[in-house]
Length: 161
Ligand code: ZN
View 1 (cartoon, rainbow, N blue to C red):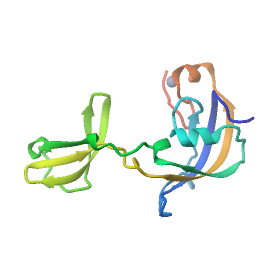
View 2 (cartoon, rainbow, N blue to C red):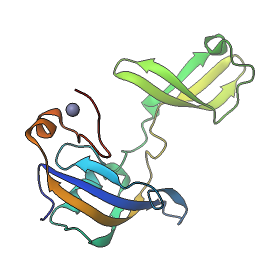
View 3 (cartoon, helix red, strand yellow):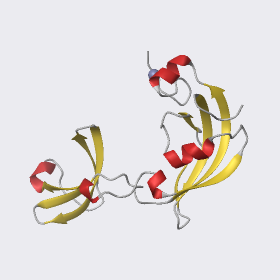
């Protein structure tokens, strides 16, 4: 079975940056499972999965724009230090969860200037080209329910009723 719309695909991946540094890998753990055609994975990778079969191993280079997007300086925000009540010591690189208009947002402190803290809501991998080494582990047809929900149920997916 070839990967196409409404397939549930499980694959192993190793993600490396342009400098060869390994960012993330599923090797040694469970494969990543996704519903093809539902935007569950970055667009550049999803496009490269089309037509692949179980057992296929291949490399995919994904430009930043087809990955987590370009960095958006509009996602940098100035927040008063007083907003971080209960945090003893603020430091550049610290991660926080913040409530944004579209739900929970993960932000990182990118600078501290006196009583002003600059937080960055860009995805940590925004602006980066990505290199994936992929191994397709399984391909099956999605159930009607999965297609309607836009995500995978059961192993490696969402468990709910
Ligand atoms: Zn569901």
